[in-house]
Image 1 (tube, rainbow, N blue to C red):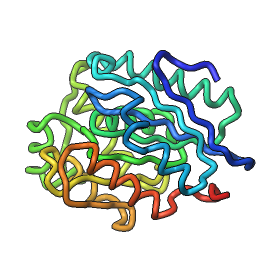
Image 2 (tube, one colour):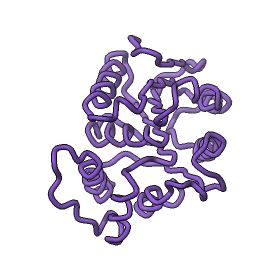
Image 3 (cartoon, rainbow, N blue to C red):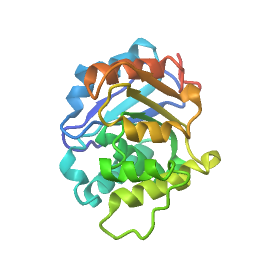
Image 4 (tube, helix red, strand yellow):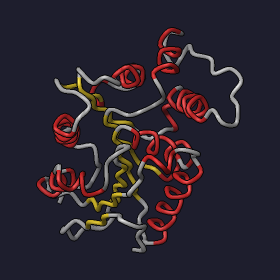
Length: 226
């Protein structure tokens, strides 16, 4: 597979048809190697899942105008499809959650499922606005300027969540003491309880790694076990 700069591509040592590709998107100040070091790929291998992994170097600068991160995501998906992957999942941590949602709302039919760990869905101001309105279901985005990407993304997410029948399953995990948990609380209201995990912890790798293992223990990937 043709890889973008600094990406990590790990193929499962399992001989099985219909393999899954899991696209991983790190947080703002993190690199692909951080997910490797914190056991995100190892957790998959311990469970002998036929899940290949592509971790992108989707750093914070790419999100500044939105177009760069969108181009990277589309290129990665196109490359995966050309490489024979028909089952694609996405995982986003913190700011990577924005990328995961972007990827899913723009190419819904191609994404089988989504993992979000303490996702960044917007600055505290707009999250407080949504919360004050009674949640995403009651919030009205109003006029959205071309530069207001946070409001546009939340509006798209709202539309998708209210039509869950046509949207891939979302598995959500976050720490009970996460300083940004307001966004996850809003999202959790729209998800089945068995797809949400909350554990003691903050906005840190120890918590995310623990949540990742908990979500994997729910056996979210259909027909992926060796």
